[in-house]
Image (cartoon, rainbow, N blue to C red; front, top):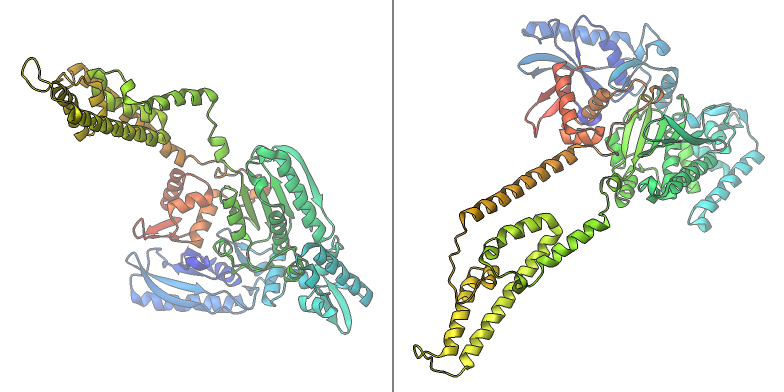
Length: 619
């Protein structure tokens, strides 16, 4: 399975003739491999069966397809079974079609993991791809004179002066520049404007009735509560500027309700729309649309990705321009900074604004970019004033000097459990403060010990009435002995709470042991609950990852299963975590879907969980 190229592996039985349609679709697209399991569907048991089978497959493909397709046929061993593998390479003479049906009725393409009859506009795009040209470079019927050409050049020069930072270095356009960009074509000494010329001038309404940009806004996350919208026609520069200003104005009007989308610059949004104009298929039905919801902004562009393009390539910065004449004009006018993909810049801007990573989704015969709102603002409520006031006294108590504590044995014995509960109550931020308070108390105790020793050394020897020992020295020794003992054990709390002249048994009472054990059990239960809550929070998708709800017009023939299969097709070694992020669903849903598809015979997993890969067996 050639996953890096987005190829597809299809299971075919001998009596099925649809593999010819798939072979044509692979030649019209990115190429692919077809695996034959024999008439029984269990592989070939004898080598004598394989050679005639290969000859028959090669003959059918060679005789039935136009232009001729030359496949590479081989034999592989899969799961102990011998199978025949036919590899079809991307063709250079598109469109390919079934000879008996003709070009319009026999050309097939791959759409959403399925082989489908090509629409007329798709056949036209295949013809353009075979001649290395684009729809905006096709000549229109009307001819233009030198005056019109000069006016067109002045219009583009004014736009470049207004938009480019190096306006002083902008060179004036000449007729030769328009001919090189194929905005102008010369036929028998007559100059004819191309489709790109008319789109840039705003005179392409008859050529492309849907060649405009549509903006809309909805409440919530679905197309139920319509707020307002506007359509932008005219020249392409007017469309791009109008759509960008309108949508950015709606984001600014929402303020905090935009949840971070307004932090993306208007210039970035304008260049993103300009790229959509350069990438759209003007022969395909539909229009460029910008739809703003409560949790996302959708930018939909009519037209599939080019046959050698994948979403992974777009994310890495690789790009292939569909309308090259318009792109050259946009680059000259300063509406684009280059021909490379704008997605890496968009991802970087979203990361700086603390927004979720934008998603690129293929829907039927269109491509959509989703810009998600910031989800953590709604998920992290601010602390109330009462909560802050209740926490502050606890912190002060944790940092209070130990001589203020009640000097009782019970308090000394319970010091450690109380500190644990207190740290759990205050949270992680208060733990360093409590540790600092403990260190300060230990330092204070050490200073007290040194002061007592110094006093004992300087005091005069006074006879004691009972045993003749110096009274001050004996008192100092009685006072410092427990302090020394407790300082060595790193428990200053117990030393401060005990009487220096009294020897206490530090073994807790049975009732106190039960109480300490209960406190420890409660703390352990609370930690378990917090861990479970954290896991549930990680599994629960946020607003930016929730499964989007589309109307029938938006979704067309796409489904969640097809999107999962498409992701696997582009990267057979994709992990469940990557599937979760790509589809915006939970890990549990990914496991449930892949298990169901494996039981249905659609997917197959080989290798280990870490280094294995997926195989798509059938649609």
